[in-house]
Image (tube, rainbow, N blue to C red; front, side, top):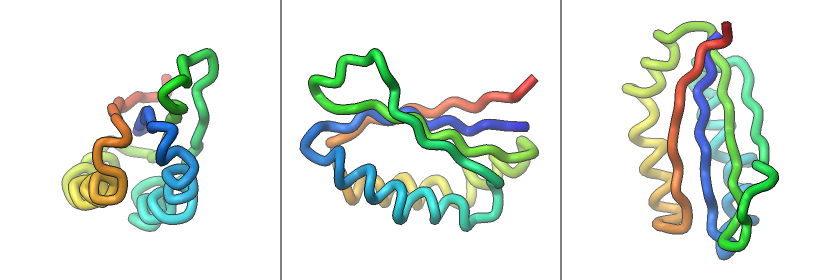
Length: 100
């Protein structure tokens, strides 16, 4: 199994609106690609949240090919939507993991 992990630090100014958007729009849109079969969103604990919370969103898929298809065919547009909505009010980094 492949896990596509997105870690996001969100400013306090947009944190509530961002989380609502993630749950109601962004994550469902990613899941609707059909390339992932499960996801999990978590808030990181034991972090300095003075500037805002940090979240991880983990999307599960069965193959690297599914991840690569997402990356090439869907990610650029969906990432741009995030920046259009929230500008510089968040920072994200992505990792890909294989369950062993």
